[in-house]
Image 1 (cartoon, rainbow, N blue to C red):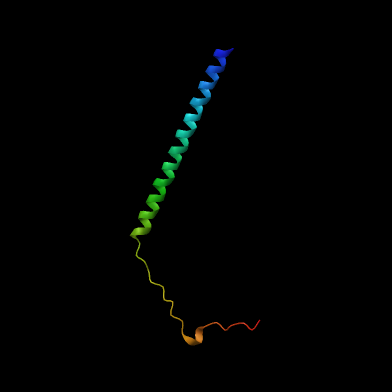
Image 2: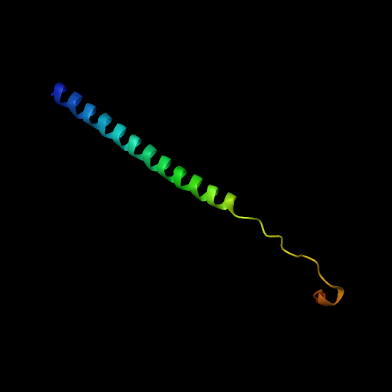
Length: 64
């Protein structure tokens, strides 16, 4: 009986290692995709947005 328990424990540890390795591979793939997205965004020019507001264009303050 004790030998069977040891074998089951070994299988459980082995499966846990497989799950951990699988999780790490998934995280690595997500990081690689994120890196590609960042490279794509870095290659795009930054467009300046005009934030100048003319005096007549300002919203009126509410009188609440």
